[in-house]
Length: 203
Image (tube, rainbow, N blue to C red; front, top):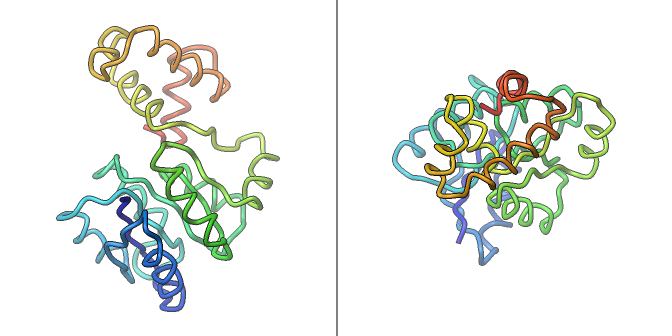
């Protein structure tokens, strides 16, 4: 069963998502919070699989909150839940570390499948956001959790053999991930890959 928390300062939104998740057998709602600060206190004591994150909130916005959560709890996946379909906001949220961006008119099935998908390491976008971002040259590449791990270890200067040893995979598999990353980021060497991935806040 996947554990989820919601961070949103709109009571009606919270109530709606609470109703959906509490009636989903494969998901356990662990808490709902009106602010990022309240959620930080919970996360310091309890691990969760997915955070549903609003963007416009008082005191701390969802982009800054996402960066903090991903730095402290990299295994926790974040899905932005927003009314905004602006490309620039979506890109900033994804660059901050979110694995998904869904609009608040999302269907029940789309939300549940989105939660499951990000846990598998897949990026999730509303159809509208997917169309908007796919028509931009600088759209965010879809990077799996395993590829993120390889990226992080590459950035730390580890060799292919050492990465394979730490991740319990073969050097050939590491090289396969590296080639996929080069293609996804549109670069030709490891140095350029690390530079671009760092700029886009994947590492």
